[in-house]
Amino acid sequence: MLINHDTRCALNAVVELLNTAPEGPDGPAGDGLTDLAALRRFVESTDLSDVGALGERDLAAVRAVRDRFAQVFAAGDARKAAELLNALVAEAGTTPRLTDHDGYDWHVHYFAPGASVAEHLAADGGMALAFLVVAGERERLRRCEAPDCGRAFVDLSRNRSRRYCDGRTCGNRLHVAAYRARRKEAAD
Image (cartoon, rainbow, N blue to C red):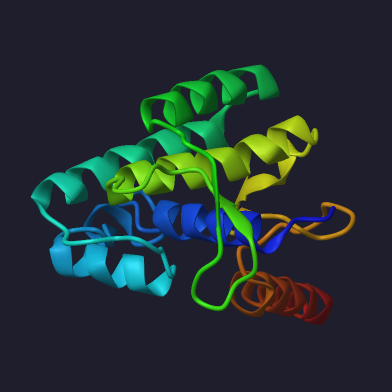
């Protein structure tokens, strides 16, 4: 599946946003968006462009967008995902425009000039997720299968076989545990 740079960046931002949610691997105390400093770190880590001053309204709005993205990931089928995405991008005031900035060639931003950070995320992230639905690739939106994880990720593997958010952590940990269990069983 061919995904351009902008779509990949938007998908990465959606995943990073989802993984700040309190229902993630750290439980209720694990909310990664508790204050404006955390929101600013998120904006900087995802390289969101055209983000101005942030306020409490932005924090609440971004958390609401996070909840809506979680609903898209949990949607039972493409039709439900499409309904959720249509509402999300419509409310964001999606305004496609060509731009070239920060050393990147021409690309499309879907958020309007002066949009809030939540509208930015909803528009660009919503459109990136919509591209997956249109391509018949909604099943690439996944949650880690490690029993104690549940982090979001987009499976961009060629054969859609990725099961863990990170093969070096969750995947490796489960493979080592299975190996030790087999060795113990063989020794008994």
